[in-house]
Length: 364
Image (tube, rainbow, N blue to C red; front, side, top):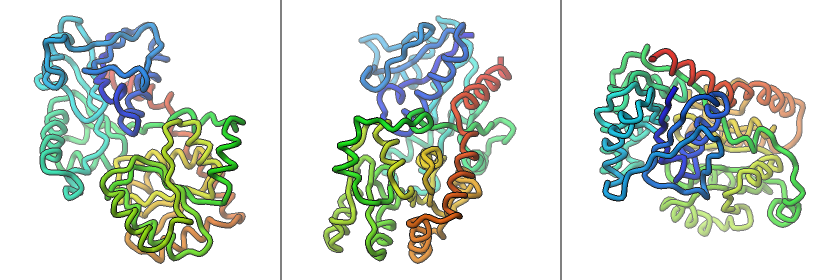
């Protein structure tokens, strides 16, 4: 089988869509060693992704092609010339007027559910590309049942065309080992008990709401890990106005092993996001054997299962009470951590790869 992947995110994105793309490519390559895999990308960045499998080849535009047009439509000629069997769009889009079998992964339609969090141009581009991909792909992968329902609702797609295939997280969280090279980091940055926030610092992730809870809980520390967007200005202003500098710390972490180390040393993860297509930090927290707190939205209950801690969205007292409940050790806390660790095993790369390959085979 010849499989081509839209790999722009794999080579150029350190976070969610990039992590998913690398995970799918690596896990499928490890199983389908006799297949030919092609990674279509307008730009390589070997510092982010450097495939090692011998059955992987790179597809790039020539110097005479506009990279944006090539990804949108120009890549079709290469796919036809190479007799590619399946093209998998890993991040919400496939080439326009593609002539071979294709599958697209849709991660979320939050730009339609929460339009105020996206600028007008981006929103229109995302809408057009996602809708075209859903209408024209032979099959659609949704990363959650919630995303499947959104695709049906917003794009009027037949639900039989959509398969839910859960994703995994970076192996650093699954195969954790306490690395001595982080000892100094632990002693200087993680010396006090703390709760953890992981996610981009943007309005939809709702960090300000968590900070309001921290303000009202005595003797509690918060460490935040994530890329700072323009929303950070509001966050910084709130910290200044409420004198929270001694309670809140921001860390810039690019190393997943170090991030896994931070998870393991925290008292628990708080994930206050308003909504997601999946929510990878939730499974990172469960694999890290710490309590996970998130809101009672259906998507988070789907991913977090029956033993995560849920607060009522927009209810500050509910969040405060939930944080207090995980701050000290208890039998319930320990039991929930263990049950979550057993539950999260279903979110793994091998299961993801096998289910994707099975879906490939249905359209050939």
